[in-house]
Amino acid sequence: MMPRVVSNFVSNYMREVISIHVGQAGVQIGNSCWELYCLEHGILPDGTLLDPNDGSSGSFTTFFSETDYGRHVPRSIFVDLEPTVVDMREVISIHVGQAGVQIGNSCWELYCLEHGILPDGTLLDPNDGSSGSFTTFFSETDYGRHVPRSIFVDLEPTVVDEIRTGTYKKLFHPEQMLTGKEDAANNYARGHYTVGKELIDITLNRIRRLADNCNGLQGFFVFHSFGGGTGSGFTSMLMEKLSGEYGKKSKLEFSIYPAPQISTSVVEPYNSILTTHTTLEHSDCSFMVDNEAIYDICKRNLRVPRPSYNNLNRIIAQVVSSITASLRFNGALNVDLNEFQTNLVPYPRIHFPLVAYNPLIASSNHELLSVDEITKSCFEPANQMVKCDPRHGKYMAVCLLYRGDVVPKDVSAAIKSIKTQRSVQFVDWCPTGFKVGLNYQPPTVIPDGDVAKVPRAVCMLSNTTAIAEAWQRLDYKFDLMYAKRAFVHWYVGEGMEEGEFSEAREDLAALEKDYEEVGLDSNDAEEDDEY
Figure 1 (cartoon, rainbow, N blue to C red):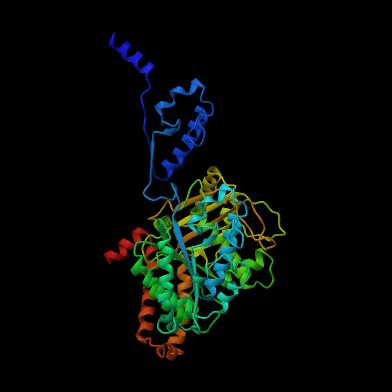
Figure 2 (figure 1 turned 60 degrees about the vertical axis):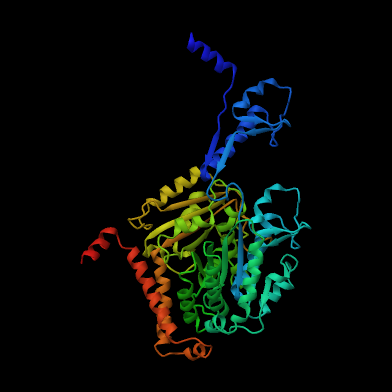
């Protein structure tokens, strides 16, 4: 008799179940489950019943509790160690020197178009809920204006003045545009020791104000060039200070690396090696691009015969937009700021991923490319944004960030196909190698720009030993000049010790060696150790 009593009891009374959703996958599955439960039981998004008189929904008390006000609340817990999937966290962008400021101008122009923000900071459509996650990059004022969480800093005012008087002059807060009175004259020492010292305190003060306005600061994006005096010297000092004040926060760099044939100054190799040495322990991940590689992409893919800096910067902005898309929009597979480091940086010093973006096709071209085609194109040497051949090295990690009309099945098929290619070799100690991000927000393009609007795109970030080619090239140029002590007096005259040159060069030689060692197969490394 007893079992029948229990059976009757259970059939007459429902017992509750608590759902616990853990981590990105668990939280996203939970979101889909509760969406479906609500539809099944006729529960609206605010928890009220579609038809309060419908008795068929009575059994939902197993999964929902009912408040005194007739609202139905899921019996569930959503838990994640970082809040990106549950909510959004803020990122502060810092644009340093001419290159950093000009790239910043192109990036914010694109962000505004993507989020429907007008040049004065107001929303194009205040009722459009799709842009809600832009609080990662924008703060909202009491008057409904959206202000970039950014700082623009240059030791001389010309380039920043162009923004102060340009189309987006009302978008940026005037206090976030910082300029000095004299430039660094392409001299790392002036940016780091003398002229830069006058601007560092006010810059840090402005960053503190921005950080105080964040609920949960996730980290910093720092945009600069390796070759300029401000981009190299001031940035390296700033990175040291940020490490001191915000030690646990991520610091990611977007750096313009010296091109093999095109040079903006004779002393680029000095500035580049000095800044790399100083920032090596303070930067978590540095995405490098060189102007020559992007010039070639502009000429070949976009059919722009004589590309300007504006053309180049808008391409870089597309890359930055793809990298930051999952921080600004909800996606199927989000990539958090910390995940870039976790998945791309096997050792702290080996943090210079190669960047590729596809498709970049002329606006007159209406060719539609598949997921497989755009993925394979990213592995072609001609599409890398630093002049080096990835076929000459081994991959340690690859991060593929897709956006737009892309489904997981197509991505899996594309990756499976890539793994069969002999030209794509991975180190034997990291056989998996692929991290994928999926974001359904399609790529946005600048109206009347060079780039065609496409339904899907991919940005590839790859940590490969092939990047050592670029360091070797730079070290060689440094050695040619330093052997004759050419131009060294300009640096020493600004308070720098000559010993810093040899110290920096030794550090870069060690970096070359690091890349050589991680590229060795496990068996080779063991044999070397025994020997």
